[in-house]
Image (cartoon, rainbow, N blue to C red; front, side, top):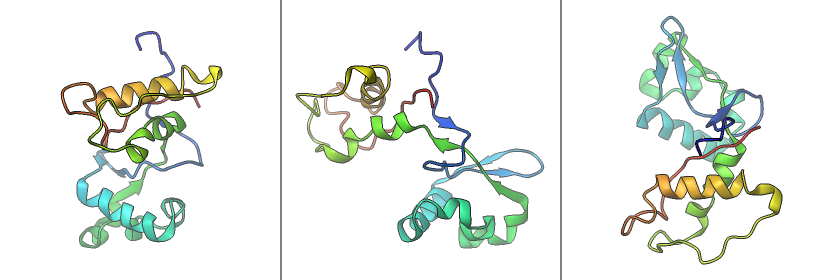
Length: 144
């Protein structure tokens, strides 16, 4: 990990899974709360992830915050592809299994991407610490 100069969580590009962060237009303060994330997640569930790019801040903010929409701008960062693919183990394997898999196959060109992000997201989620791992952890990244 120490030698991974290209390690990151997000990319600044116009495609991909958006990070549902808002930024205050005057101060630059980030707004990323459980309430805002859950609201955006419900919109994505109904309309797809492109709704982040199509809808206005007033539509993306939770109803109780809509009157503040002019004070916030939606962020333009997207989740790095290695982050979401590297965390796929959390979606496909049972959370009560530790270690979560006996075999992990990938192409030889992926050892710095998918495989490393999978290991790191598992470790970051508590994997290998007596009952940890296997559920809900997210992390990782690779060059885009």
